[in-house]
Amino acid sequence: MTETEAIRLFKCLSDKSRLQILKSLAQEDMYVERLGGGLGGGPPPVSFHLKKLADAGAVSSYKSQYYRMYALNRAVFETRILDILGEESDEAQIQAQRDAEYRRKVLDAFLEYGKLKSIPAQRKKERILLEGNIPSPIKPPSGCKFHTRCYMACDKCKRVPPELKEVKPGHFVACHFADQQKIDENGNYLFDIKTITNQR
Image (cartoon, rainbow, N blue to C red; front, side, top):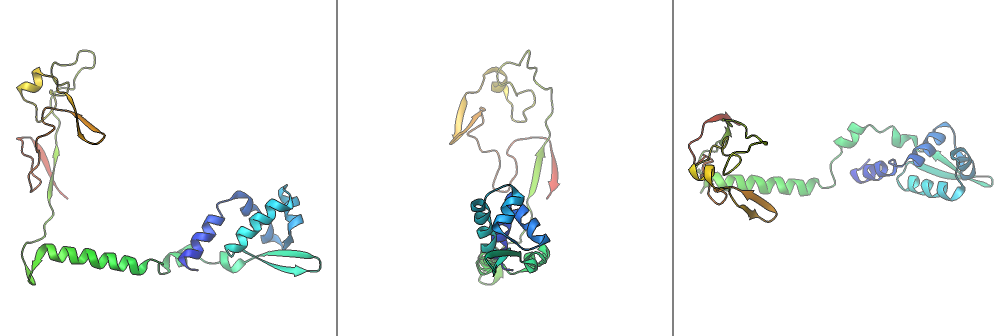
């Protein structure tokens, strides 16, 4: 079963009425009117669902006297999910091209004329430890309401409430340091703060 066929089948099985039809056909082959009677619906909706199931390869039909009989394609449902996942993706070639492009970018970043120009290294990330007292909602502090726990707080923060600024479209910040760079090109904080360093 190809990836496209599997997607079509799984989409088809997401309807409760179709599952009931398949359960009935698992017992024996049936015609539309009998399926409709068992499901409590008329022939038109049953025919609609049977068409979807047939398109997905879940059922097949054949002529028997005056009736069009429908049968469950058991071989389709004997396919294991793991077998489907093991099939080559329809976009395998596109994924291979993406992987090759990513590999080329990585090599270009660290190699120059076939020689290593820099050693790839994981960047250390620092996690900020919040200290101080949690501001009281009943009696909030003067100035910035968060200055009692902020690692960047200065005297101005204790006296002057910061204005709400839009630093990015739809992203508002109330901080005196909103426009100031906080991290250098190596990922280090530009403020004297107490941190826990985690190698990630």
